[in-house]
Image (cartoon, rainbow, N blue to C red):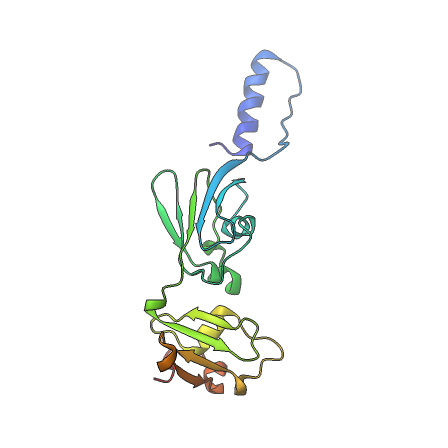
Length: 193
C-alpha cells in the first residue's frame, strides 16, 4: 500500500531514468475497488464492491440499511489480518464521533449483531419518531436511552409517552416517561424500578 504522493514520486523518479528532460505528470483517474462482506442485521447481506474512501456507514447503506433488530452499538469488523474492532455507530450518528465510523479495508467482514433481548429490552410507544423494541443497556438512564435511539420529534408528547418493560407480555411493566428524565441526563438518575 502506497500513498498517492509516494506513488507519484516513485513514478517520476523512475520515469526520469528513461526519459531525461521529459516532463512527467501523474494523475489518479479512479479509486481501486475491493470486496467486503456484510452479515447480520442488515436488509441485504452479502459481498459488496467498496473502496478505501468508504466507511461503515456507507457499507451499511450498500446493504440497504439496518433491520429493526440491529445493535448499532456493537458493530464488529474483522480484518483480513485477523484483527477485530467493535464500533458504536450511534456515537457517530448522534455525536459525530468519526472514530466510530472508520474506513473499511479490502476483505473486511462487517457483522451487525442482533440486540440482546435477554440483557434488557424496552418497548417505546406513543407519539415518537420510531416506536418499537430497543435494547436497554446496564446503567443506562431513560434520558440517555432516548438520546441514543433518537426518537424525539417536534410533536412528541412526552406526557403521554411510555416505556413498556419486560419480556413476558402478561407481566410487562408500563412506565410513564417522567419529564425530569427527558430534561436531565445526569448519571445518578436511573429509570423507575
